[in-house]
Every structure is written in C-alpha cells, then in structure tokens.
Image 1 (cartoon, rainbow, N blue to C red):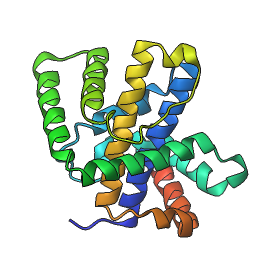
Image 2: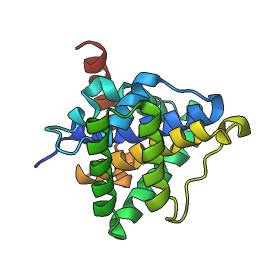
Image 3: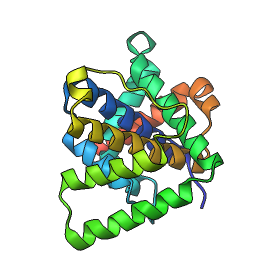
Length: 208
C-alpha cells in the first residue's frame, strides 16, 4: 500500500494528539473526551481502509492537527513538554519494533478487543486493561517516558491509567507514521509543508 503526504500528516497528528492529551490529564486531571475516545479507538483499528479511518476520519485527529500546526508555525509559543513527549513516543515505538515486541502487543490488543465486543466492557475497564498491556510490555522498555504534571493527578490511579492508555495510542500513531514513511528529518526540513497539509486536513475535518 502506498501512502501520501497527507497520510503521514494524519499519523503525525495522532502522535501530537496523544502527547497533548497526556499533558492535559497530567496537568488538569481531564482532557478532551472526544479526542481521547478517538485515540483509544485507534488502538483497535487493525484493518482500517485508510490512515484517516484509524481515527474515524480527520475529525478524530482534529486536536492533534491543531497542536501540530501550533507547534510548527509558532516557535515562540511552542510547548516544549508536548515536543518532548512526541520525541519520546517516536523513540519508544522504534525501540519496540527493533526488539520484536509489536506482534505480541498486537495479539494482546486483538484479544482485548474481542473481550470488549463480547462483554461490552465499560470505558473505565477498557482503559484499565489497556494500561495492563502497557505495563506488561512497554513500561519495562528503557528509557521510560517521564510524565510531568500535578502530583494530585499523577497519583490518581484512574488518571495514571488514562495517561498510560494515551501514551499507548501515541506509540500506535508513531508506528503508523513510520509505516507511512515518516522520518524525523521531515520535522526539521519540511515544517511549512507539514503545517500547510495539516491546515487543509483540519479544514476538511471542521467542514465535512
């Protein structure tokens, strides 16, 4: 399957969306519910017909597209915490792939998806089980992603589980970005092109 520049931008937006959601939960104890659901659902998009379909369409990556645009077009207002999470998620995805862990992780996500469908598991249970897979297979990989925020939120078990689930979705997006031909140098030398494509995609998402 061949991928376009827009495919790469949507996948990249998925990484930025996860990073923003992690930051918001860690700082405020809550995040955009629709974007969180789209990112969570992306973990179970095993045979999507397109990259956009992984997020249920461009609208499901809207927050990531907005964040990507602001990070690339407004260097003076760039959120360094989000940038740090993005780099860490890409690095961790690369490490998981090089260590041959992706197949087992994929098998466990498919098994979880079967349980979700069969038993109609509520959202909290889904997040807890996603966190369990993350802790089993990803938390042990070094260097770990260090999340900063308010201790009150970081120490809350539900918020901690949500953060790990969002990190998981960011890793999934980073793997997708690599599959689409994404390279780190593109973030350095194609910033205007990426931002322009992200604006087109965001306009399409907001005006379907």
